Length: 100
Image (cartoon, rainbow, N blue to C red; front, side, top):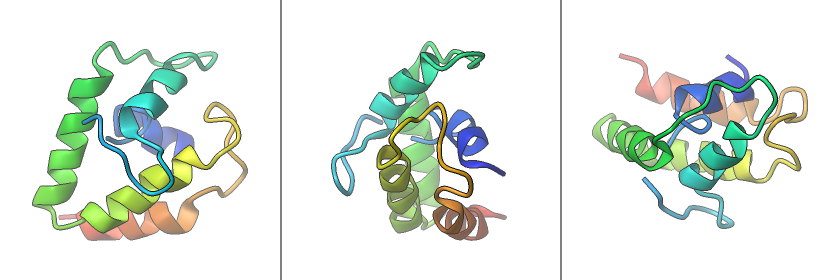
């Protein structure tokens, strides 16, 4: 899964309530920014999607991994064109944690 796909999956993206993590990146802002990307599948409820993603991460015991992924995504210069392999370690850690 790529960062862009993860962001879409997280509803941002991807993932993920209007809360602040790390250096100030938050799911809702990333989602809204992602909606502006060419060819993006628009998310009309970024706040709701992010709230669900945050809850899912909490329920799975993966809040730290989730926060790290959102923070990394927020550190990208362009959410529409993340660097190749961007946040792959964070995505892998979250995926392993959240997998059933």
